[in-house]
Image (cartoon, rainbow, N blue to C red; front, side, top):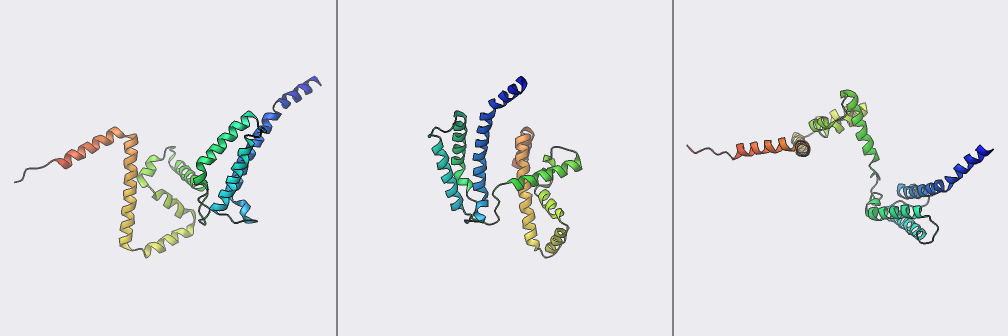
Length: 213
């Protein structure tokens, strides 16, 4: 009995901190519910204006709790930080709802990048894929997208058959320029000494003048 009482007493010590964590978790879930737009399927349309109104109303409601004395010191600190972050990000959080099909977060893009990295590591056995990206550039993502569904290969062949050669050269040049800029930034950031020496050598070679005959 004494041991059971000790266990119950130790659990009672964590009861209030656990309740605080649950309340703070509810704040984050409430914000996510406002931003995900799931409430608009039944009773209202989802737009930048409606989401912004709901978010501002929730922020005002929570700000009132900071002064009514119902929150603990820890909850006041955490809520103040949460409201501060939401106030700073407010102009950017409600800009995606008026455009249909526009993603609210970049989670899908991050998962795609992670899948690309995973496939490369399985093929090459390397953890770092910088050389892979620098060599093939955006073609890595294009190839992976076309390979996900077999029908896309036939679609690519069909589109390539009717592609204008001038446009093809233009697109190829644009891709080459982008990849070249990416390679220059990588060399400047990670191999700055070697890159600057190569620039100096190229400049000396280009600035060398030969006397006229």
